Amino acid sequence: MKSEAALKILSNRSSGIQSSTKGRKPNHRLVKQNRSYTVEEAAGTLGVHKNTVREWLRNGLVTLDDKRPTLILGRDLITFIKARNLSRKRPSKAGQLYCLRCRKANYPAGGMLEFRLLNEKVANAFGICPDCGGMMYRCVRSNEMEAFADTVRLRFEQGMPRLFETSERSLNRNFTKEAAHHAKAQSQQ
Image (cartoon, rainbow, N blue to C red; front, side, top):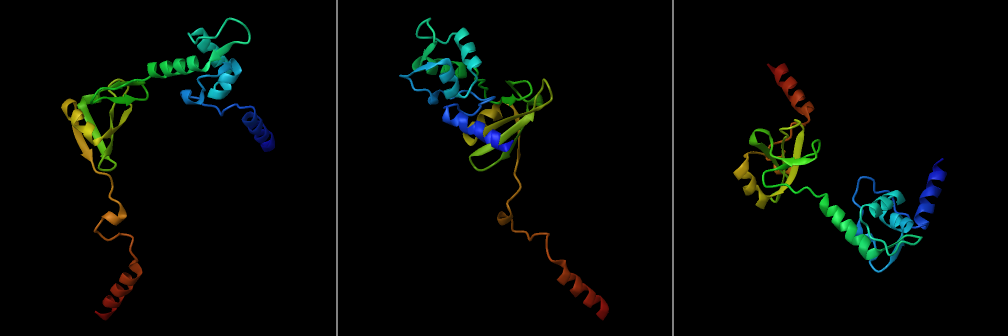
């Protein structure tokens, strides 16, 4: 069973088919702009199914002519993929976070936002979505934090200090010596 899967992977690699990019945007940098691609070659280069490329053709991807096999100029394929990827972006305004459940940017419920500082330059911002009640997240640079202060109430949460950053002794100490010392002191009284 494992050898069959290994042979399938090797045959896909030798035929030029990329690994599956399920859920990911096709990378236009894999396409050569001065080359002509058939539907199957374009699908293999981008790691998508050939029916996906056919759907792109129905949605406006330009072909060289109406003859068979259908040929797509690499330059046109790059332009189409870039435009498609740009149309799917969901930019958020200052103070907004992205809710994964609602799939849109929104201001946090009650205008409350928490920052968890990762280092001096970057913090993770998180809040609660007012529509669905799910968690909303955003990674924020230190120079963007002032823009958040105008729209929401901020609460900074300091991350747990690292072990070498603390001046306190660890609570995981060897108490056997202390217990022996305590028992000795108790027996002397």
